[in-house]
Amino acid sequence: MVRHRRWPGCALPLAGGALVTVIALAWYSAAFWYLNGFRAPGL
Image (spheres, rainbow, N blue to C red):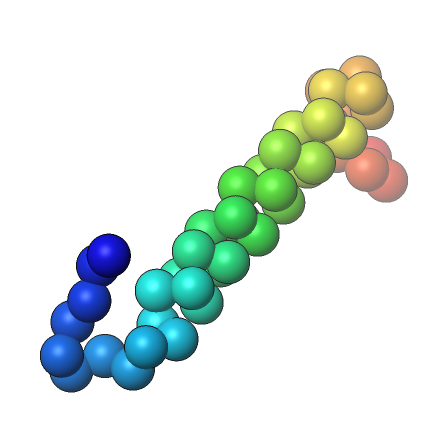
């Protein structure tokens, strides 16, 4: 387990959740961009 004395115990799960969220948003935005014919929406 990764632990740091100055950080609260919930810091690692929150950081992991934020990382998963960022990766998922990047993945879905890339898929939308690909399916939209490599054009920005509304242009």
